[in-house]
Length: 310
Image (cartoon, rainbow, N blue to C red; front, side):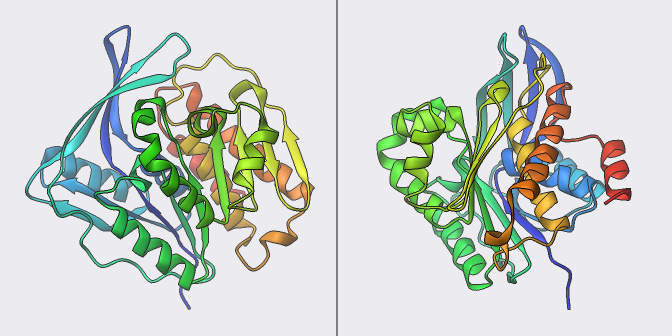
C-alpha cells in the first residue's frame, strides 16, 4: 500500500523581487509552488501539477523541485511558449505588487493526472484555480480528488488586480469553496470577493459552501470557524522583509500538521479545539519565518530540523 501523498496544482513563475526598484532576490515561485517546496523540505511526500517552458528557467525550476524533495512527475514541459516571469515590487509594508510576463501555449495541462486515495491531500487555489483556459483540467482534478475521498484544501488568494473580472469569476470561486473540505482565505481575499472585513461576516458567506474556514488577518491573528466551534489565535507582531510567501507557507503548515497527525476526510470532524490551536500555531510559525527573509518558503535547515522531531 502506497504512503499518503500531498498533490498540489498551481502556476510556476520565476520571481524577481524588487525593493525601491532595486532587485533583491530571484527564485522560483507561485502560490502552490511555494507551499510544495516547504512541504518537500519537511520530508512530506508531495507531487506538483503544473507547467513550465522547455527553456533555461523551466529546466532550473524542475531541478529545484527535485532538489527540495518534490516529485515533478506531473509538471508539463511545453515547447510553444516560455516559462512565466514575475516582477514583484515590495511596497512600504513589504507586500508585493506584480507585473507578470507569460507566454503559454494554447493547449494546457494535457497530461495524465494522478489517482487520488482517501489518505491523500489536494491543494489548489490562486488565479490558477479560476483561469478559464484551464478550468476543465482543474475540474477533472477536483472530481478525481472527490472520487478518491481525498482532503481538498483551497486558498482563493484573490487579489485586487483581478477585481475587474470578479463578476465573471465569483461563481467559480464559490464552486471552489463548495468543492473543498477546508478553505483558507486572508482578510484581503474576502474583502475583494465579498466586500466585508469582519470574520463573522466572512464566515456567513463561506459557510454556505464549506464547513471549515480559516481566516488570516496579518497582525490581527488567525480565526477558525467550524460547525462545532470557533477559535482565535493571536500572532506575534513583526516587521516583515517580504510577505510574498507568507500565506503559501501558512497553507503548507496546515497541510503538514494534518498529514503528520493523519487527519483526513474520515476524521476531520473529530478534531478538537486544542489540536486545531496547535495546527494553526505551526502554520503561523512557518509563515512568520518567511516574512523575515526574501525566501518564499522555509529554509532547508529548518525543514530538516522540524522533520527530525516529527
